[in-house]
Length: 164
Image 1 (spheres, rainbow, N blue to C red):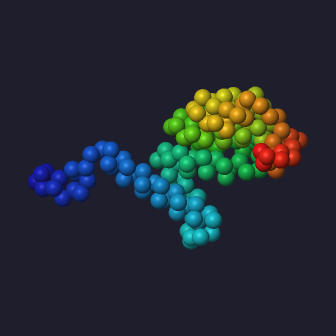
Image 2: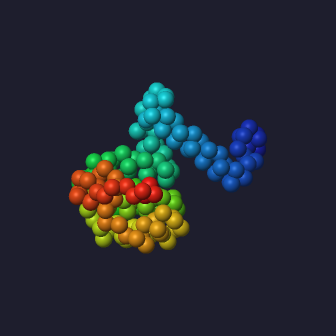
Image 3: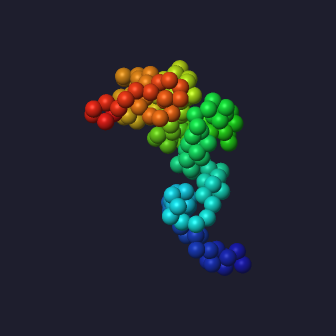
């Protein structure tokens, strides 16, 4: 009886790597669907899809939730690293999984709440993971940024002629 059930299972003869690739493809499709919903190109609710993916440790969804939760740049929205569902906790867990731009996101988020020590710490982590933008930014360590949220904390500068 057990042999018959195994014969009916379409995934019984597929290796673990192939199953993992299939699962990643499924998660990628769900993430693209959530992005389409947020962009207005599709109907539905994107937030539950992102949480579904984040609970399955899908890094880009964790970063997207954290980005959406910290849009206004208030320190109270950030939360703590120890809380897994807080924006800081989600970015930290994405960084631990090896998502390349998670540490850079955490650094900029800390910059926008006015924590320059944390900004520099997470820039170093991003540079160690191989992020070239973070390495360049760490080398010049700008305390002013050309982005709109920097104006709120008094650290806005105009764009350079080269676009940076």
